[in-house]
Length: 530
Image (tube, rainbow, N blue to C red; front, top):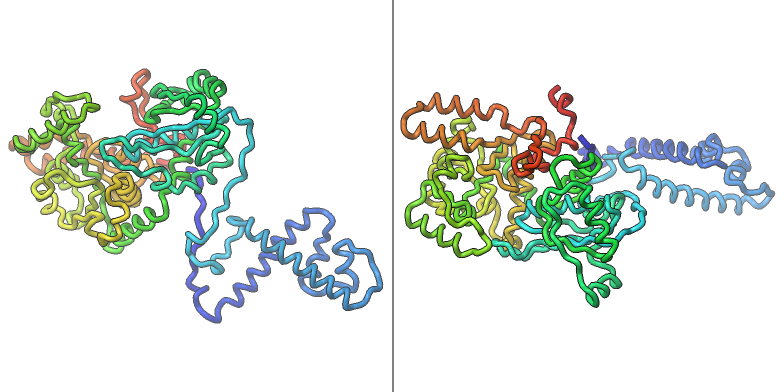
């Protein structure tokens, strides 16, 4: 697994008055040693004399010889003035050097753990001949856009073009007008990747003028394409037009058959460069802190919002009035192509999200502790008062962000579904257990992120098997012990452990999603099993 930098951590000893003198002496010794080591390799400096300069036991005139000054019989006053100047110069070098040694030498007792105050050490900029500019309009929900952005950054890097900060989808059902900088830390995104690709917040003025006077070449790249497509089809167009605009970014890069260096860059963008904004991170961290102070918690991505049920056509447990309401909603949106849906067949095929009642039975059958905190990582549950009753009875420590925080703390994110989803994403990757009731983009991307963070427990439910077992239990064919035993056996190897990503040639929709199991960025399968 790729190593990630860790910020300075606090030390309790440094907070106590009168106990840090030895530590500061130690720090001085270590810094001197580091400086001597580095300066000794510069040439022109004699280490032994540098040591004498530090310790004050130099022979007469050595201070001048050391710094390559001509010997003279000038007054003692001038000599000491020169020595003071040299001291100031060397301590300036020390200060600059200390900033650069970073991870090599971390005096933890010298710093407070205010991570926001620690300046990031960004990599040097990669210099390359720019072939043009790539603009993208991301489409879909938060995690669909997130994955697409990672893909497009990787494409831009290997085409040697300049990437423009993406425009986010403001036309989806959720009607969220958040832009990239409202959700992600745009400055960190730009600077942390500068050793790979140049990223600009907007087109340079001359290119803006060019597309205003001429036209902007826009197109959707072909889904599930390999890098050959981008080299042979897209790059010539960028060179021809100067700027190319992608109107879609979802699933435009294949899961498999991609060079490993490209796959690793996709991971780097996703797991390191795409940080949420400080306000989102601060609120998410507060939620996590509250939950962890109370004990372990399970994040349940319960996909039972009204839009999910309407567009999926899954109406298990709904009254006829509710079915009519959901059907009417589905027909009201012309862009949703599938109108007539056989709910029963779809459910039997495992293509429906589990209902809150089915989810409750599943968690109980898996032996989940009824006293664990269950954090609902989702939007508003459809007909929640009725449909959540069973889940609340089985797991009384049911919480959501609205019950953990004051209304004023969530107010900045209200009416911004993608920002609210970002909070749930952050909490979900830090939970003790993550359970999604449906295989959507958030479920897939969070699963992969938890693998990347050390194969954290993620229970991936086999809905096709489950609905059959649930129906048998409910009609009395299976006793509880049998039902529970079969549910546990079904999911014994569905907990996010190391595994090989499935490949289905010619049918990418049927194979494992890259961001669900980014195996190129994880420890080798055999190593992770030991």
